[in-house]
Length: 215
Image (cartoon, rainbow, N blue to C red; front, side, top):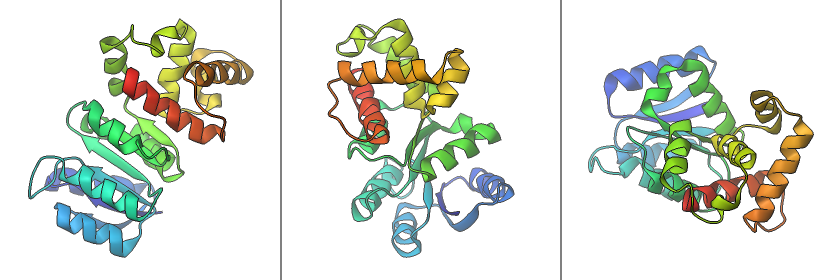
């Protein structure tokens, strides 16, 4: 699996390269600036991009904007964004086109190799991987908002895990319930969020977007 990596801190970039290579990823390019990222994504057509939000020259949201432009040029391009802090806007912008293949992790999470690599693989496969801390903060900030306020406590637990990108089997295992029960809960969640009928993966992305909008 070919990866384009964008991170301006040399030690972190080098560490990520070594980690990805240890798990049999091929590093197509490891760059440190926005212009280099734009060029690499356009020319190399990677299977997944791992991108720091803040890159030179602007050191604002250069990495994120490069990723969004690349996804418009190549719809569905898998992108895992790394950020130093929880920024709800970044997560919402990434999901706004309704497609999967999107992840948002705090940089602290990359020090857990298994969790980081799992997120890269999940995003590359077209799924979502939202940082648990992002979801936790959104829950605490807007727990009474509608329509999320209409979810039962169990449905909110399921929604939190859906937002993290967990499969029905993984959710069932973590909550110690059956996959059939998970499927029932997700169906109820989709109904309460007024999501239109479509394939399950797409509805999950739409549910996560609604979750970020209403928390």
